[in-house]
Image 1 (cartoon, rainbow, N blue to C red):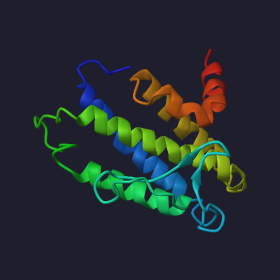
Image 2 (cartoon, helix red, strand yellow):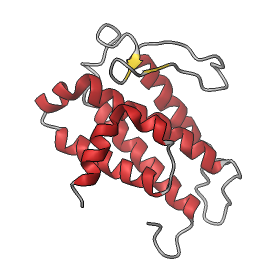
Image 3 (cartoon, helix red, strand yellow):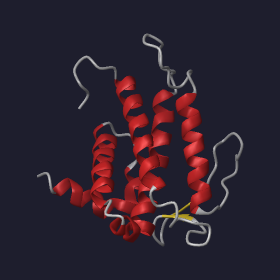
Length: 171
């Protein structure tokens, strides 16, 4: 729910930055397990494969390893967050008309990192005893994107079962 008196764009921007930082930190703990050899393609289980394109430097989607894809992704997101015309840091500076569409793209792509971690590296997460952190972060992320309808339901398919479990525990 949008806090009373809060601007929707501002709320989405602040949370997008938080999710980016959380995912960056969580992925950082398993980078030794996510290598070119162990993850030659960016995937979320056998049915979902992701190809990278940023629309600027790489216009046509390319197939690449998960670590390469995630590196491209995190660099691209950081560039978006650092762009004052997209994510203004000064109070009173308006968000651009395309802000919501950029935020949705960022969140959709960040979801793919969660999906990759859950599908390909959950054993490592368990060994590191980080599953509570991952689950809490992901649950907050999912509730947020669902509350504000920020990711198309079809994009969430790789983790649909988990999303349903997380939702049912609160009922």
